[in-house]
Image (cartoon, rainbow, N blue to C red; front, side, top):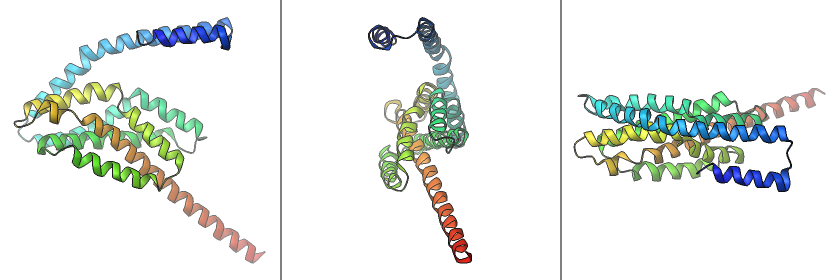
Length: 239
């Protein structure tokens, strides 16, 4: 039901505007078929594996006597989930291609994954201490707008897209299920109030980490330009 309208629109446009060669048209239709099968298998996998595993892991971790270990474990799991998120891999590949290699995909992937790890760690801290989500979101977005004025437009656009792709299927299934299960096990916490909100943080922190990377890139470019100007002045004097 999700893919059928896209396929129908493509078929109509092909006969009215695109007029692709039969071979190319067939390749694209095969791609649609593979995507449909992949989505069906993925959604079944989510129901069979990711959600139950997240719930079981959250339940068992919350029972630990020293449950503050959830904070570093949350960072590690968030980082690994971010590193495995398919949407992020698509995003960083396109950024590397469109920037002509100026922004390396491995660097951006690591930066976004660190942002997700920080988000999950903060979520675990929030679950244990009972902080309101506002204490993270309001200062976080204020900082986003401050940093946004100090980076190039390319990084500003990339940052907000990274925040969107970071909240992909891996985070929304495994991490969210784990957070809700942990909230259900901790006395005084509500799965509805405290368990949810982790996806909101995951949408925020990659924006901040990408903007921080953009700020470092801008400072480096300014230093290189100053050094270039200094060398040019020396050459002019000697000349």
